[in-house]
Each structure stands twice: as C-alpha cells, then as structure tokens.
Amino acid sequence: MTSAPDETVPASTAPDLSTLGELRAAGHVHRGVKAEIRQNLIARLAAGQPSLPGIVGFDDTVVPELERALLAGHDIVLLGERGQGKTRLIRTLTGLLDEWTPVIAGSEINEHPYAPITSASRRLLAELGDDLPIGWRHRSERYGEKLATPDTSVGDLIGDIDPIKVAEGRTLGDPDTVHYGLVPRTNRGIFAVNELPDLAERIQVALLNVLEERDIQVRGYQLRLPLDLLMVASANPEDYTNRGRIITPLKDRFGAEIRTHYPLELTDELALIAQEAAVLWGTDADGTSHAAPLVPSHLLEVVARFTRAVRDAPQVDQRSGVSARFAIAAVETVAASAVRRAAIAGEPVAVARVSDLPAIVPASRGKVEFDDADEGREFEVLEHLLRRAVAETSRSRLAGLDLRPLQQKFDSGLLLETGDTVSADQLLEQLGTIPGLAALLERLEPDSVHEGPATVGVAAAAVEFALEGLYLNRRLAKEMAGGRTVYGA
Image 1 (cartoon, rainbow, N blue to C red):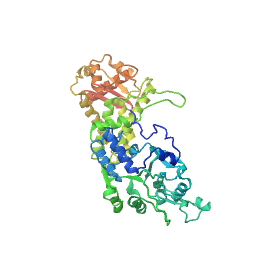
Image 2: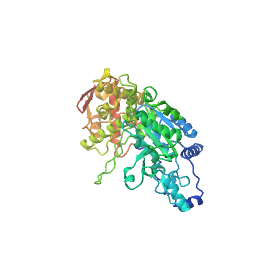
Image 3: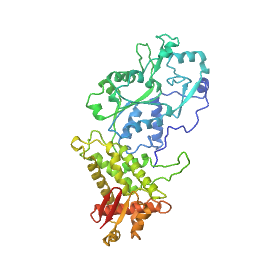
C-alpha cells in the first residue's frame, strides 16, 4: 500500500535559459497563476486525465465543484470536519501549475521577469534590460501554507520592517527595509490557510486586503505590491458558519465555498486506506532488511467498517468527526502487531490475523471524542463496534460458504489456541487437514498469491477469520486471556 506518486517532484530539469533576452527569444508567454491553472486543468479534462490524481472518494462530489471554482478563477474555502482530506486536496492543486516558471534571479517574491513589482527589481530591469538574470522555480516551490493559530501575526503573513536592513544604512521610509511574510513570498503560487477562523480579526483584515485589492500593506509604507496568487482556506463548518469566528467581508471575498465529506462508500474507504496506510518495511541503516507485513484484504475491510461504525456511533461527538487518519493508523497498528508476533514466533513473513485487531482499540481511543455521558466507556464502545465490524465483514465475505467441516473438528473436542505468540505454522498444525481451505481462501483473498513465504500466513489468517465468524454466529465458543485466545465447541 503506497501513496499516489507526488506530481510536485521535479520530473525534468529546468529550462536552459538564464537571461530575460533568452526568455523573450524562446517565445515565453506570461500567464497569471489562475489563468495558468485554468489552462492546465482544461488540458487535463480534454485529455481524459484525472484533474487531481490521488484524491479518493470525491470524484462525483467535491472534485467537480473544485474544478468549476478553478475554471472561474475563484479563491476557495474548503469546509469540512477533521480528517476529510482538505489539506491533501489543497496540496494536490500544485500539480495544475506549470512544472517550471521563470523568476527574476534573487527576487524574494518570485517576480516574473516580464512584470517586476518591487522597486529594486524595476531598477534592475531598467539597468540590465535583456541581460536581466533569471532563475526557474519548480511548481513544488510555489506553494505556501500556514496553520492559523491565535498567535499568528500580520508580520508572519504579510511582512514587517527588518531591523537588520535598517541597521545596514537604509532609511525607515525605504520599501527595501521590508521583510516579506509568507503571503508575498508565495507570489505567483498557491497560498493556503488551514483553520481560517482561528485567525484573530485583525489578521483576517490583512488577508481581506490581499483578496480584495490583490496587494499588501506593511505598517505605514506607501507600498503596493499587486500579488498574483490563488488563495485557498480550510475551516470547520461550525466555526465558519455559526460561531462568528470569521469576519463577514472576508467570507464574501472567497468566490467558492466547497464542502468536503468522509468517504460515502465502503469501497472509497478501502481505497483511501490502501493508498495512505504506511505498512512498507524496508532496510535499516545497518543493512538489515525487513519483509513487508501483509494485511489481508478482509482485515482492511474490517477496519473500514469499524471506522464507519465509529463515525456513525451515537456515543461519539459528531461535531468533532472521526478522521480518515483513524482508519489509516488502525491498519498500521494491525500491521505492527503482526510484525511483533512474527519476531517473537520466528515467522518469515508477518501476516496480520484477527487476533491482531484488538490492538486497535487502545491505540485509537485518543482519536475519538466521546459525548460527556459516555466518558469512561470508551473501551467498551470501541470493542463493541469492532466486533460488529468483524461480524459484518464475515457475513459479507463468507455468506453461503459451508464451514461445517471446519466446525466439526471442534465438535469432536478440538481446542485451538492462537494469539500474539502463536505462529501461522503452529495454528495450522493444531487443525491438521482443513477441508474447504481453497474455497475459503478464494472467498477471503481471491487476489492473493497462494505460494511463496506468505502462503502459510495467509492461510492461517483466513482460518482464524473463519473461526471468529463461527464464534460471532454462536457456533463456537471463545475464551481470551491477555494475548491468548482459545476456540472450542
């Protein structure tokens, strides 16, 4: 399971043009950021390519709205609960910028050689003409982001007087004494403000000027810098719409308000988990290699169903939501549990099993906000929802499959022990010949390769899941003590 390729990573070297004259001779055309994004987006749509690759679950809802906003040239605010992928979505927008763009060499605010906006760059252009040196910035360098916090200052975002420049001999009235903040330093790019309502009102006023006039003002300077950027903000809907934590004029300046959401379908939840969960284990600095732990698809489905059940549970504070990171962290915990067992039991490949699922509960408790009436019952609620998720997955995956031959082994007096110290070999040895194992594997892991070092682990995972299904359907008994589980009739 890996993340989608990062389109912002340079795929080529910068153009071999180093002066303004060479740039003009090459026929370069200067476009504003919004026009640049618009034309690149239209090209992707016309070619049938995804406009925002790597974004899961928004294809028919958020993405079309966002595409319309970008084509309209609007600044955007994304409204959604925590963990709905707002920041990921914003960062993906950089893929719609040109891969390389020219800037005046040494410019602090990425000025285009055709259109300098600071007095220093205009003087340099007048002096050097076509010999004006230029540099190139990759689209990954044209993105700025600030998490809004109460201590954020106007200087952080817009700029302030630089005392070092004043000490060097410049007068206080000289615009060159300004130290630019994050917004002007993202000129000709995309600037994002996460959790916009948390900014103090006076800071919001400073942003209002950027959106209204497309320029900045620093203290009492007669300074006008017409910035070229796309402004995107994120916010919690309740903070943005109900609590009055954002000034009304600033709301009005965002051309588009787009609501995000958690994955609507189970398949989207599964795709998101598979894309984002980091369960790749490589090589340590000392050269020690680790086989990648395998989390079978039926366990991924359990985690996805568990996440959705927690999200909908009446005991959970619906205003805080349940982040997609909840499911991602749960899968990573399950994988880690399998790796721990493999190390203890000497398994060549770590394959997760049902007995690894309980590790999710203590690890995820802090990621969920419960209503006051249910404080103290967090473990109980999460354990119940996890059992329900296993039962639903069992019904979905094993419906109609004849598990009576497996159950009959226990009717004859078999007791099977599993847990976090029992290897896959040891589990299967207790059962002996397993009637219907091929059919069970076909139901649970149709895409798995039934050969190689992971084969035994996958078989043990499938059998253990079937036993848990029989237990949840009250056809087997189960006793648990610490990390030890015993199934019996």
